[in-house]
Each structure stands twice: as C-alpha cells, then as structure tokens.
Image (cartoon, helix red, strand yellow):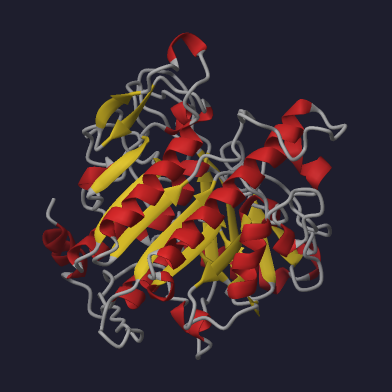
Length: 465
C-alpha cells in the first residue's frame, strides 16, 4: 500500500493530529543521516558505560562520552518480534499488531500489516535512502510485512528470526531474494553473518552518503547460540566457553561500531549523522549471573520486570548533543518514530503512542509520557487454527506510571491475576510487592491498563498475507 494512502487512512477521522516540526538543520539545510544500531539480547549492564566490569566495550563507552547516555530507556517488549514492531511503528504493544514471537508454518514471522506506517516509510517519503541490514523478523519473503514493502529501499537480512540463531547460515535474503553463502554448506563455518552485516553496513554508508540516509542495523549479537570466530580477548579466562563467546561477541560488535564511527569521520559526515545504539530487550538468564548483565534490575528476557525491558541507549551527534550527558528522561522504543520524524522534518501519523525525545538530545524542554505500557502474548511457534493450542495467548502486562510499576503475570491461566506493585524510585530491583499498602495506586494502574489496550485479531491470520 502506498505510504501516502497509509497516512491518509490513519489521519482521517482523527480530530487532533500530532504535528512535529524539525528543529535541527545544518547551514545548508541538509537533513541529518540516521543510523540505528540494535543489539540482540544485550543487558542494561553489558557495556562499560553502564557498569560492566568484565566485558570490554571501549567504542561504545567512547560513544557515550561523546554523546548522551539514557538511564531509563525501555524496549518495546521483552522478546524480539514485538519489540522491533514497536520500534518501527511508534505503537506500544497495547496497540501494535505484533505482541509476541510468532513464527509461520512457512518461512517468516507473523507480518506487520500493510496498513502499518513505519519509520522507514516516513523517512523514505522525506527523501532518505533507507536500508536494513541484520535481523528483521516482521514478515517473510514476499509478505506484506517484508522490509522492502515496509519502506526499505535495500535489505540484507535474516527475514525469519528463528533462522538468526545460526551465525553460519547457508543463505540470507537480499531485497527478499535468497542470497546463498558459499562455504557454509553442511554445517561448515566460513561466512559469519555478523561480519557480513558490518561489511554491508560500511558499504551502504559509503554509497549513500551523498544524500540523507537511514540505516537500520539490527545485529544478531549477542543472541544465543553463543558462537564467534574468535573468543579473544577472553581466550585465557577460566570461564565456560559459552561465556567467553558471549563476551567476545559483544566486544566484536563494539569494534564494528567503532569502525562505523571512524568511517563517518573519514567521509566527513560525522557532524551530520546521528547514531543510536541500544538493545531489543534484556539478556537471557544463562549469562546474566556471570556478567551481572542487569546490574540492579530484576528479571531477564521474556519477563516484564525491569531486567527484561530496561535497556541501554546511547546517542551520538557531534555539534548537537552535549558530550558526556546523562539523562534520566523516561523514554522507550515507541518514541523513536516521532524522534526520527522530528529530526528529518516530517510529520508522524496521528494516533501513535510515541513522544519525540529530540528535545532531550538537544538539552531543551521535553514533554513526558503520562505512562508506559507493555503486554506480551505467549505465542507458540508454527501455530495454526487446527493445532489445538490454547486460544488465550495474553500472558503478561506491565505499566509504569511515574515512579510506580504495576505487573500482572500468568494471565492466560488467570485473567484476573492480581497486580504486583513496585516503587522504582525506592526499589529499582522490584524486590518488594507493596500492592496491599497502596490500594488507590493499584486501582489507578488497573484503570490505565484497561484503557491502554485493545484486542488484536491475531488468530485470523494464520498465513502470510
């Protein structure tokens, strides 16, 4: 569906449209380039700038020193697909189409609908050259959710996130056409997909830098399986091999981020390129204990406690962002679309949930969220209407309202499960459920939860549209 038609459909009937005017431009009125780098399952505490002691991340730490580091930034969800869907559409999981990891019976994941307006489509319409290199997970080849149908001029990626667990695949997808990787047949380990993504990213920047570009670089590192060509600089550590590999994967990605930043300097586009680095959700439990990947936070991937959804975010934009800034602004993945819109000077669609955090980046007055909301569906892979699996996938929900955090778990078994309540200002580790002490806060959060969502017809779509 044409982007202009998508926008018209979304805006019609909505009395108040959100209009954001870009505040930043260069002397030549050039629109800045945007690079969004996304790690996969990297914890809040997995880089030195956030307190990591064992894993070496000098380039990411330097990026934080040269830009801004957020301490209260949240993913769109605690698992891959819904978090990425939120990032692309500016809608939280109470309103977005994808609310859990859900694989199709054919290759690909449940696709975002054709009616969705993605950040890539908005930037494409604004004259940006757009590319995704890495892990997509929002629609298989030729589906309505495929990246080339959702605003990307160029794509080189895993389309099905299940295949992204293999770092030596036999093929990837280039513009949704199968691209074979010679040497990886029969389980051989020759072409490491992460290295290919970095090579493609550097090539994209070199080729597209004459005009504004948007590069979405969702790496698969450090998602398991923990496989890496070289476990240095941790080879001599007396750790289990999987932990050496996990640390080496993060350090390898850190080096590649450094190569990207150095290329921007070499091309003399450093000051007209804004670079974001974050993670799609919290870490898996298997590595969390050794590296203290979540620091003081409770929980891991799959959970809506802070450890599953609070993530690192560093943003670098020389000449625009004050170096070594630390921000406590409460922000989230659904804020990226309006932020990118404001940076590029385009108007985002009405009805989104995000609020631009460009004012925070520039040190000006920032509008805040009334609350943040998440919900997670417990999908089983390869579900179909005839599978006989449970029809109620709504599993968890959480809401942050000021310092208060409400969580409900096991909703598929008990739709009336009680609300857990935590005060994040006093108890960042969510160690003490104080719901019984604050019935008025519980009532308020329950009302907000009810108002923050509507049902989505997942199970009528059992095949790629």
